[in-house]
Each structure stands twice: as C-alpha cells, then as structure tokens.
Amino acid sequence: MFNGFRSLKSKIRLIFSLTLILLALLFVASIKYDRAKYEENNEMHERLVSHYLYNYYLVYGKIDEAYLESQNFSLIKDKAKMVQIEHYFKEKNKYKKYAVDNYKLQRILLINNDKFRLFLQNKNKPKYPLKRIIVFTIVFLLIILLYFWVIKSLKPLSDLKNKIKTFSEGNLDIQCASDKKDEIAEVANEFDHAVTMIRELLQSRQLFLRAIMHELKTPIGKGRLVAEMLPDEKSKARMHSIFERLNLLIDEFAKIEKITSKNFDLTIKPYKMSDLVEASIDLLMIETPQRYITMHVDKDYSVNVDFELFTLILKNLLDNGIKYSTDKHITIIIDNDQIQIINQAEPLKEPLENYFKPFHTSKKGLGLGLYIVKSILDIHKMELHYRHEEGKNIFTVV
Figure 1 (cartoon, one colour):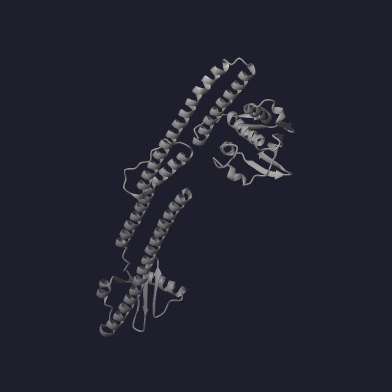
Figure 2: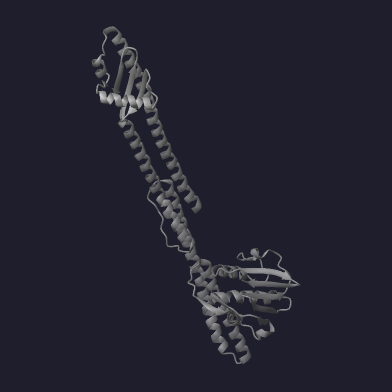
C-alpha cells in the first residue's frame, strides 16, 4: 500500500511534468509557426514592393518614396553605406538582380535591374506575441497551482500512512478521524472506527484475562494456607510444588498476554547461553532434572536478549522436548552461536510453520508452546529451525 502511495505521487508528478513539457513544446511550436508565417508573408510583401517600384519607374521615371514610406520601407541614400552593403552582398555571392539579407541587424533588399539599382531597408518587424505569452503563462501557472493543490489533497493520505505504521507497531492510541468529505477522509474515518473497535476488543480481552488470573490467585493462596496445615511434610512439599507450579503458569499467561498484545518493554542485556539454559531448567520445576536433561557446552557464547522472555522460549522448547520424546529425555548442545535441543521422537506430522499458529491441535496441551516461541523469537529477530535425523527431532535456535 505504501509503495503504491509513493508510486501514486510519482505518477502525478510524471503527468504534470509531461503536461508542462507538452505545453512548453506547444508554445515554442506556435512561436515558430508564427515566425515562419511572418517570414513567408514578409517575403511576398517585399516582392510586391519591388514589382510596384519597377512598374512605377517605367511609367513616371522615378522612385515612389511616399509609397515606400507607407509600406515602412526606407531608401538608403548614403553612398558609403551603399558601398559597404554592396561589398557585403558580393562577399556572400548575393549581388544579383534581386536579393534579400540581414546586414547589421537590418533587413536589406537589393533591387538591381536595367533601370535602377536600389538598396532598401525593410523596417517591418514581427509583432511581439504578448497575448500568446500571457495566455500560456496563465495556463502554466494554473497547472502549477493545480499540481500543488493535488499534492496538498494527498497529504491526509500521507498522515494516514504514518498513523497506520504507528498502529502496526502496537500503538493503539491514535486518532485519524476527519471532518472532510472526500474519499481519503472516508478511508480515514473507517480506519479510525476499526482502531476504536480493536482497542476496545483488546481492552476487554486484557480485562477478561486479568480478571481470570486475579481470581485464580485467590484459591492458590488459600491452597497454600491449607497445605501448611498438612501434618505430612512430604505431602506438604508436594502441595507447595503444585501451587508454585500453578502460580508460575499464571505468570506465564500474563507474559503471553503481553506478548500477543505487544504491551511490553524489552530489557536487552548480554547473557551466556548456558546461564539462560540453566534458568530455563529451573522454570520447569522438575525434580532431579539430570534424569531428563543432558547438556553439552562445546562452545559457550553470549547473546543479547530479554532474560524473562528468552528463558520462556527455552523453557517451552525443553518442556515440549521432554513431553513428546519417547524416552522422556532431551539433549542440549551449545556450540557455534546456536543451541540445539534434541529428543528421541517421531518426526513432526506437519511443517514446522503450522505449529507456530496459536491453539494448534495438540493432544498434550493447548498448542501455544511454539506459538509463544515464534512470537518471542521474532521480537529478538531470531529463527527456529527443525530437522529429523536418525529417529531424532532436532530444534535449533540461531
């Protein structure tokens, strides 16, 4: 859409540029046409004057200077100037019975026949095309004004583009309603209505989830109190572990809600990958994790991540690896700026991309594990790769 908008402005500039170029070409062509027409008429006029003078001389034996003056011609009588003009015409090989040329910005006619020899100056000049220039100038300015008017009318579209970009970055507090009556205003008003509906929907969803999590906290707190009254220490510890697990799940749901609504602030710092894995194992809250997890640190490395979110990624990958393995065991390998999580299991029945969808069909959970992983990896601009080799599923974070 935004590229299309830029191309729209480019098309408008191209159209107006071509219009101005064509207008300029038309103006130049009209001036040249008028000039050529004037030259043609002027040459015909000069020949008519020449014939009239010859015929008049045959009848009266003299030059009709009054006629020449009426036709805006003047007879050159200065002998020195006549010599110079004659020399000029001879140099240009134009000294004939009848010739026309420009001499020192003057149009000179040579009439050289058996009766007389005359040098005449044609004082007629082409009329300055003032009216034509005024008309073309007005049209030119109107086109320029029309161009700026069209560009200005597209400015709300540019503002709408910026607000849509802001909205796509997660900022829902935007207002783009317009009181104008054009099509851009209609689009802006519809988008503003859609933003309002989405904002209300997200707020109601957040309120609903937070209310549920708040209500769950109460029975968990009461359960902990009841667990304290149990006489059996083993049972008490088990109940404490269960309620701690429930409390941790609620906190994770809160994180998921923030991730999906993009309502969070990242705290990016460098961490050793081995430390992140150890923290993720702690989040699993399993007794004797060495029974389920084997970790090989061939070459440890640091990565810039948000600690809470990234450990949630690894925790979900480890949890899925243990849950879906045939021997309830996974191997973690840290090497070459990547971490591999390997388990003995059947290959995935669908492409990995399908499992990134929320609430993907799953027999052992809600189908949110890889959706959460993908969402957080996208935030960190990382990728999850998958392959199946020798009966083992291998997930790699790179």
